[in-house]
Image 1: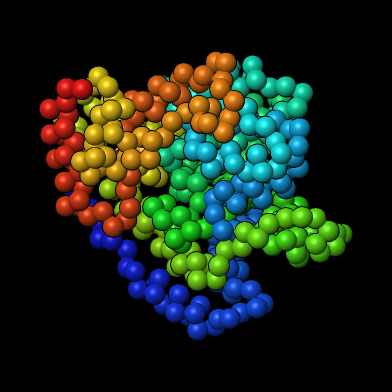
Image 2: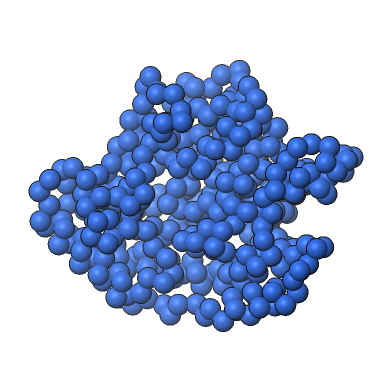
Length: 368
């Protein structure tokens, strides 16, 4: 098996050069408008609103859904703290929900136990590009009258049962930070079919201007979370390369998983039925003793991964939040036993061969 050739980078240079030649542009970025229009069209949704980060996309989307002080929002503990930060900024309370180790999907029985009269929304998180069952999500949200704001930061290109990640709920939120399949260095965007949500998000990212219909500019306090013009140019160029970027990431992931098929103590986590996974990160179940220590050891040996390199832990155990009475044990099991290798489009076949060799040698010698 060999990897497809890396996508041509010349379009990135052309778009950034064109953008710089037009600056300063006080009227706003033409590349920003083109990115939003093309993103909506390519993703098959009415509106895309570009912002400065995936976190900013969540912040704007949750504000547009009316989330504020006193509200509770269900969020999986299987996520990063950046998913939860906008809730605190809006004065809302995150309520952490466990996940099923067998599927990585939300534990809806646990979620149902945690619904109260103050629960207003749910944030499914498609970590590592993996997507839960959209039918279960829609049914749960409908039963409890909840808005759905998807954290699809890592999931562009993933679909399940013919529903694309980020297109299932009220709004979908994507990151374009370096390392994401669709990247612009820093940046993000939200998608929605609601003109009301889109208008709110556009106002929210720029100190409430232009204001939504019927409202005055600056009549609400908002943020400066605009996407800078050169980053919008990168985003646009990469959007036009997106099919090739997804194909490459899927090929990289499959290449590494194939190389590790016969390594004792590791087994690949396969997509669920009906899931078209973008291959964001090669995922392996660690069946060795001391699995988290093993992931940390691999990071020290130059194999970047979620738990070893970035110390990913259940979000309900993070210090900004009260210590949980009942920790999300399914989430802890997932994170302790999952090796999620971090990739970028620059990782060549030689890089992946090196990762595979390091992992195989470390597995054979592991004795924590």
